[in-house]
Length: 414
Ligand SMILES: *Cc1c(COP(=O)(O)O)cnc(C)c1O
Image 1: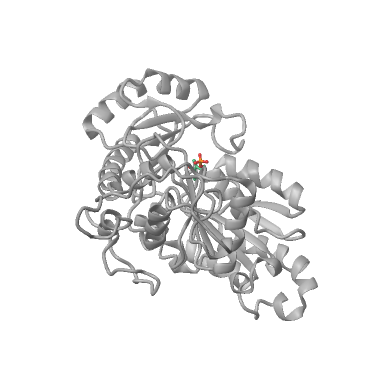
Image 2 (image 1 turned 90 degrees about the vertical axis):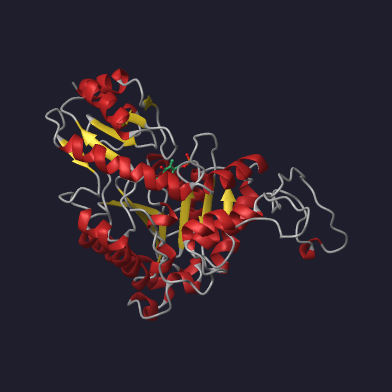
């Protein structure tokens, strides 16, 4: 894939540029003689505001700062949000702010193979906020819909019969207080690379009065824009592809719903889960090259996935770009590309560990989405779901020469 199609220009979009142009063009200072080409790093913690503090564009940097604005605008344009994004101190901070929208007595439905930090955070918040947590196989649409059906009547009963049958306005339109809860969608999932039927699940959630949230970290807005499919909100670990150089920890949340945005903004301010100006500046700098980085990384990933699939030591390879992958048809229908994460399984944990130790070019490290290729046996994390095979290795394929990458990996496999 050499270019990214510009899908359905949202009314909210400020320009008619394709996303790969938006990446480069957005978030620049006004074009006046002598102006910087890049936004400056604004380190102020406080801003001049006389009189009514509410009417000042910026007052105190825990609430809002010009240091975040260009990046928040850029993400809004890319995800077709219509409202500025909200940058957070980490992906998990953005996820926790999103989960704070689940009402007491409601239900949060999450994929069994969600990012393990999201699962852990959801488990803690379920107890504190008093909502139910239900895990589902997100690739099994019928099972997800059944879980939503089972969870829906409990809370809608208190809201009156009109909402119990899904005939009322969607949860997002009504605001979170009366939502039955939230469906959390990760697709492709981390680390199993399962592909959810994203449009069908968003529709099913909204029909039943649930908010629909999507962790779009693996796909990036270049490969899928869930808000266009009706999602209420999208979150990112900016740490990964968006920043792209493994030198920043950062998160973001996007929504087109002003009430939901206001609540997550309050959550960010009150918990103080804010981002530093320099991290945000680095993330915008990284974002400029997202299209070329991702293009190269996924071309590399496809080649490596094909070679792994025919290697005798490999039990299973999961990459949605492989024609016989269980997620291939869905990914082809709903994504503009297949990304650059591969999961493959070898027969034992020891063998997987030995492979991660034997590589010389691949970096044995957690995380993903940087220019350098990373390799990790996922079950070395105690918190990883027990349903992830012990011999599963996750690859984050970078932008190096693909033959160098394969030669190194093949030597480790042998
Ligand atoms: C890494 C990751 C997160 C967490 O983001 P941090 O920036 O590490 O807090 C959330 N979701 C997915 C899919 C991730 O890969």
